[in-house]
Length: 449
Image 1 (cartoon, one colour):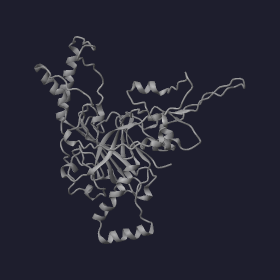
Image 2 (cartoon, one colour):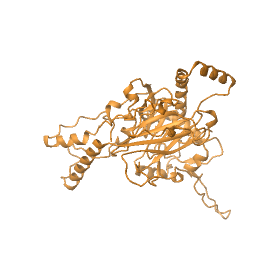
Image 3 (cartoon, helix red, strand yellow):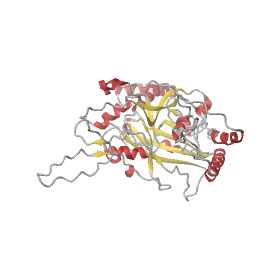
């Protein structure tokens, strides 16, 4: 399911590189590698009224634009620690591929100091709404695909001039996130004009950019309007590119093989970095070290998105131990004569510890994570928004409390990991399909090193 071009707010952001990560051997001009992760980057302020109420427009801060027909309960945004309404951190337009449902993800966070480092101060919800127009188009498209499979076609010669070798769609789900759209790769040549009898079929398969109905729920005269909020900013998207790290010099004939490469390659995932396993070490926190080095490739990232991908852990804590469990150690040699080189134990991502979806019992998968730069961005805008809504007395009291150091507000997490239902279910209490739904998902917060 592809998002409309009208909602595309992509920006070209300079990729910041950390030259200290590379050795002299890296000066050979080796190209950057594009990973399977999409990065959410802060854009311009949202000033258009229609964009503020359009659920297709992804944003940082502001008020939510809801997809469900009925307004979700205001309690969805309350902090489970203090009970007060929280600020909307991010709203993302992120429908599943080939799904007839419009989909958006909403993440709230509490900035009260007493609520930091406590479970329930960051919450995520997904809103779903059935799209009748796209569902009908999707059904027609699938029927035509089925008819093509049933009707055999002559085998094309891949070596003939002008032959097109079929392959996987390199854009797939990633083009939909944050209202993105596909674009031809550099160097692509224009395809030949289709025959008249193929034009109708081709237009049906490419015309899948249906605008979801604008959010039918307005926030006028709603408790959501009384909630605190940050200044709304567009959430743009770009692909993540990283430069391969320098390889150590090895003796002739010696090769380093990562056991994860084969498994990851089968999934079609990028293996340039995430295939590296975590070693147990009593030295520096290598998890945090890897986090900072990875983020250094683009320090402006506020969100990392990779549905059913691998999260980027922030530090060696309980959450890291649960998501990257320690494998069993190899048996220790019994006799002194048995000299065995025991390699350090490797940790790999295993989401088995995550709770399943309570509605459909499907497993949960990693979807996205909030990055520390988001806190810096929100902190720079929160004071202006709060001051505009405060009375003179409230503002005076706030200044007095700030001077005393007793009312400092701000979030201090390292990263917030969001895990969603892999089935993207929309069921009621009786297990029946519903046209729209509002479901809370799992958020794991790593607070710091």
